[in-house]
Length: 157
Ligand code: ZN
Image 1 (spheres, rainbow, N blue to C red):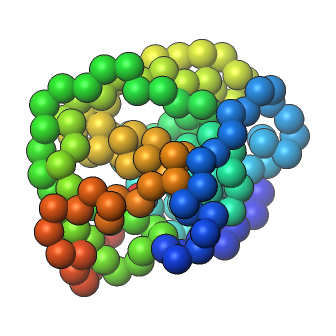
Image 2 (image 1 turned 120 degrees about the vertical axis):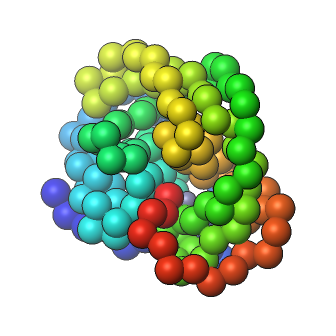
């Protein structure tokens, strides 16, 4: 496993839609391991493929409850909403208020391409929405409901 370079907003790769993963390959497995390493090294709570320059539908998240790998994630159900400051590893040192659901139920595949469902509340729900947006080429700043401001934070996606 190795660290990968995190792409910063302005890099065109962050605006592109990602392709599905059809089958697990050594290359994708390596990507997942590298993304986890890169996320932890950067003190992030989530990271999506395009953030390391790979346009595949791969997401890693850890909101403090252990690593979750989501391949081809799909949001099935949401409820509630909360507006809170959100950050991103692709825009370090910044945050802006974004409204997200407080509950998300999603389906994805794991590293063995086994399908699973996951429910997330609060930060986990926010992280899933944030990362799925990345797979569609969107940054949270497009949804910001207030100014993008400087912040000293220790959680970023
Ligand atoms: Zn992000």
